[in-house]
Length: 237
Image (cartoon, rainbow, N blue to C red; front, side, top):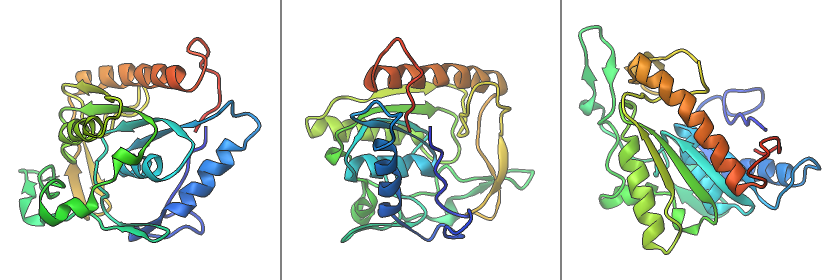
């Protein structure tokens, strides 16, 4: 397991303005060559912005066999993404679509533009290029963005290009931050990009159950596509 920071850490960029996929390519190649890695491919796990970065890694880089996305976007969000001579702009948004509740907490679920419409398509990640298997974990009460819509459209894109239908697992009552089992629910907190507290969603009981099940679903997915289905001890990214 390699947890990869990509901004606001040591000598990395301090903010999310621009990402270069070569940085992630270096990490992928490092893991692929590691003596403890069974191969021939590795797995990726990404949540939220990390989810669309994992989709980009799987789409542009070699050696990715299994990609699990937790409440991720099918479009590049929040920062310019560059790889060699390719540039993917961030998906557009409209802050006028923010809703504020009585406590002053923002609901931003409608802020992002539809990536399937007009010039917003420039921000779509070319999933059809990927050779990976995909698992999408979706919280149906996600208030950060429309994760179920993104997962459904990812499936439509992959199948339209003759690719394998991805696994999509939806959890009613689960919010944006689906974390490992028994982590406490984070229904709202400060959003770095929005600059104010936002609603993440989630009902305590349903969200807790989703975290327990999603963890097992992700493990099963990796065991299936990364080697021995009976042995979960292989080291993967």
